[in-house]
Image (cartoon, rainbow, N blue to C red; front, side, top):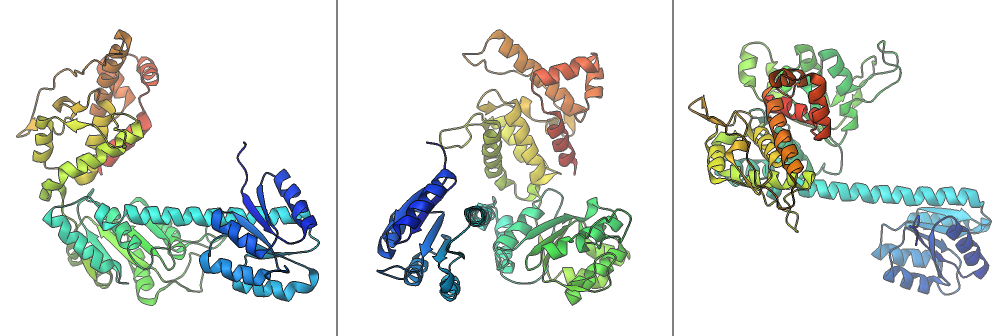
Length: 481
């Protein structure tokens, strides 16, 4: 059976209307069920889920209003469109107050009716998807799902749990890669604003003139490329949360405008004159000492105190090494799923670091923190050919003793029973090329020179061996940030 556009229940005592609607809607691709009166309609709704109910208002056993009232007491989500005659518009309005989504009058135009039905079902599906997405996000950023059992992380999560319910501005302080945006999302999704927007802004990646337009929006014609009016992130995040990452990088001029938003709860779009009210919770983040920047005159003292109502210091990974094994396991599962390899039937990863490799992970100082650890684990997943990941698959930055590089052995791997000689050669060549690309920060030109082969030859091998250059270069860049 072909997939239907949706399931519709028609509740009407008029056989001619039931048959007419059934024929018309079935032809348009809907699955249609029929109920001859209100009682049988409610019974049908108890036994099956529908995308839409077409409900007649005037029926002999029970009125459509009574049926609608009973339905809404047990189901507030299923869309209901009431069917009424021209003289029953007042009843239709009463039905809307009881929870009907719309009404149609007899006789109706089939083309117009189909459009209204399509729009009603599409809108409900979109609302359902948004609800499911928000539920999934809330579960993902639930405090119990944030990996960190160390004493340092428990203190952070306790504090985050306390401040999430408040309206106060929060300043997250920590080194790059410690998970500041993750904590900002956790604050938002566990707050009364969770149903509203969470908007993240990387302040350091935007020049001052563009940052103002990004945050506050602009009016059409306010500058050369402003061909239309555009909302800014503060307006988009109204009643929600805005996350300002790298807050220390914004100019003094922008600091003054941001201070106005915090104090007055209003802003002026670029090119505008009238202020617009906004209710936004601000979570800011920095990896530098803002107090020191205030003393040096690079950050406004009044803005500092406005932002620093509650400061949360995120510990670097080297200060919570006991969390490394759990983080490794989490990232193994994530990237094994993405690469569809080394997975158990329950979807968890079968990969493990060899004891020596795990010891090196525990001893490493992790300047890039959790983000760097994630990159190391993803690299291991991509290169692994056996469930035990050897030391050889760790990047050069980890393979040192007191700053002296350890001699890396030529990559070895266990031969899968079904692998041919050509498969083994391809896998060996792939790993050698990836290692050299990593060494030269994913530059094909430098890598080709190091291999003493033409660039075109290297590119052919990269394509044949399915090596993803762009994504890996992004990872390499992220690892440095």
